[in-house]
Image 1 (cartoon, rainbow, N blue to C red):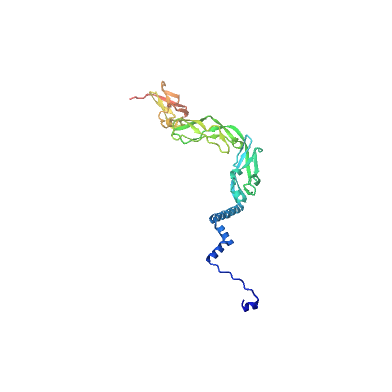
Image 2: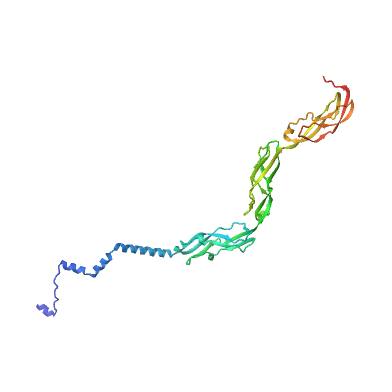
Length: 343
């Protein structure tokens, strides 16, 4: 021991021999930190995937638990209305609701399963109203209906009645010139109408679809549809009728003035007073249009001797034409002794 060491009184620490490279590697393998790292690295891919799934699931669950508002159209149905009654207005078929709650629960809602069913068994003719409230919707817990639109349903109810109503045939167009529609009939002449009393009781007739007779000159027989009258719930017992339209020549009057009075079957010279007359006749328009006034008025002088005679004025009319009036009814005929030359 040296003098310095003795003076200080310190005992020198023993010196460990230096280890070589193999010794240091052996010590590293025996380190606890080294074993932990090996365990972490083992199946590192699966561990990372599990972590990602866990994070995603956590995010989904937390997002699903957040509150949201969902709007949807929910059907409204009506049942139980007493027999003999009918709804005459157009009540709503859907209501719009807003539901608040977790997104996961809102995504499971089915509007058809939330349908509102209104019981009408207690109402009669007249108006009735129903209130649609949030409590009427069967929704999961943790959700709530925040609004309903519309929240009021108005119904207009009436009695159903049955009544026989006349059928009126509708004829349109003009028949051929000189012709006219004499009659228009249907079979059956009435139809049973069923529907709300407010509409059925006000009906005066049921009209047919138009029958066009433009240019026709003969009878028309046809099956035609009936027009359904206006009003909700009004129905007809039949929808077709047999139409029969009679078309005849148009009958009219025609007046002839200043018609010369002719003397028939006289062999003597004569003078007649008055010399002219007037006549009004009635018949088919086409036939009257062809009628000539010549020879229309005459007196008969056969077997009459010369002298003054009061004779009846007669009218010469073809078949199908009737006399309405004439003037004069009689005339003064003077026959002279002189014979009429037949040369």
